[in-house]
Length: 240
Image (cartoon, rainbow, N blue to C red):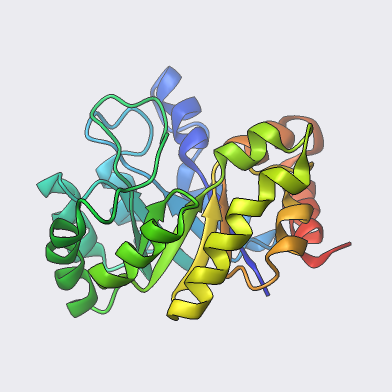
């Protein structure tokens, strides 16, 4: 089974646009779980323009499915947050300061030693560590060498080319996924996955452990409603 983790950053963006607490981030997270989501993902950034650090502590108190925190471990505040909250999983992403969104995976060969230094304390605290990578077997090998438990494949290139050449678009991801499986790494995927391209990715890589989806799912919820759209995504993962 491939788990669906809902990234609720966009809910926090909407809340922050007016101040106050509408929509209520904690309630939305609980509703996502109630509607079938098997995980909740947040990606706090240093400027707190969407998820605030306080939100992460509040969510930890109520989330009963898998809690996944994404971020750049070069930020000491982020490392402190993760070690205090102790989520089920931390996903290490090489975001630059002020980045609009994640736009590349780690060069795990170049940064292997740094990644190892960051990963060790998280694993010692009992937190599963996933490293965000491009679909390159060398980057998968580097993630394994750094001590990661899983990788998360950065799927924007797949989504960008899906409608013109889906077989060609998915091929490097299958190759990287096979390398991860051979290396004993768990496998996640995320970025620009939606109701159009998700099922083909899953059918091409049926051993996917988890997908993290936020922007597209929240956009679809504007039309279908959150209660309807989460089962729609789950059906894509189930091949229905």
